[in-house]
Image (cartoon, rainbow over all chains, first blue to last red; front, side, top):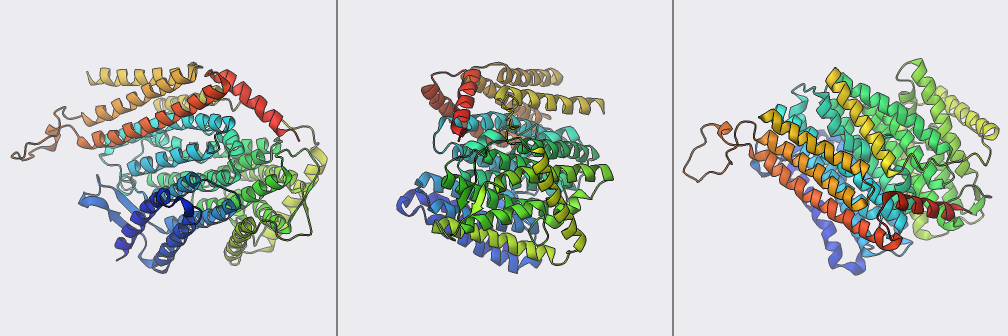
Length: 493
Length: 126
């Protein structure tokens, strides 16, 4: 019964978006039907959660060479969060006049993400990830502005190299083990870390990790706010989810060490660059980078919970900032404050306090666990970095002034308040068992230090964007250096 | 002999990567990306032909006595998908380059990057 429901879910998911080109007039409302259908299925799986994970092999092949999909507890969580984010994105999109292409691509992306979260063999992951990348390239450049096209092209070249490396890694793995199924590989104790790291590279590119995803600042800034929400909340999660799966399937110390080093540098550089930006969206883009580093450092169940909560509050921040840009008409943060409607202010404050790690807002509990998971030096570094990233957000916070009107555009308000409600409700549910006064005190101290440091150190003029570092040729150079280091280490050790 | 094959495949891959890094012309860059893709396909064929190079096609009356007497069909099936996806990516990127060349009147990476940065800066000023 359950495997048949899963089959139906996958088939409906993949088939539904292709109805949109036939009903162009109603393309605005189709996504809502799609998300509600998907939420109904997810509710069904939630009610039968004792039967999870559900496994399904298509076509009657053996497990080692067939296509297997696995619907696990983690897939359920990630899919529910993805659908909620998409729901609010669709609400916000209603306020602007969009073409049917936009809805078609966005809906197909949601369908593809659904398949990605249940994929269990390396080739299925490759196909869904490639489709995800193609859709993101198209969505970034949907308005056909020159800068959008250029950033999309940059992303595409970096991504294409990454996928070639992925294929090489999986070819080596297939040659040595004779299978691409993750469950079988995890029982084999496979430890050729060269192949594993090659497989991980496109996932690192997707999940906005420093050194590998130098496409982030331009693509996130130039794309529309709804698209950058999807990129930094959903696509990042897709990468992190499979990084987690791979790191528990392969028992290699070297891989964990590699992820720790990359994670620590991502945390640091992300926070540092976010502090120095003048463009509001770029601040958020680098802040996403820094938070992804937190997940990479501690790639366990806690890390995954933090990834989920990060995607929720970051999508809230991106949507509210996008709306703020349409109200104020500029992305520049060197200017006086603008009056904003209260609904927007509430949404932004909810996202901001979640980023700070306040108890009863989502994410604080998991961030606390990650910070104090290693030794004292790492904890101090992570605390310092989280202060830096809060200081960057204070810059945006000071640009907003609450006005007297509560609502402005009905659809945007509904989208923002829906997501704020989800953030507050899930924050309450996660904190209620783990609340302690230490947690509250810690977050208040961090917030006070950040405000004090902001007032003391930040002058309005010391902002710069190191665009030369993020040029295509330099990104490729950094890429090749990283690959060179990996190859040298694998030859030496 | 097999080592020589592997060496050639790796050489083609490194040439492709070097080409993507070194050339400033976007069309040439995309061509070199294609070269890299060919090397990747080569690795899959190399892995598939570990035991034999006889194609895995049966006439219907034979029975498979030893699966290693044929080349492995699975990497070939996988590579077919990879070829199609590579084609899609490359055609999309060519469309993007076409758009850029129409608007900026150049396909040199450095010039485009400079124009884009100037545009971004002038757009950001409040």
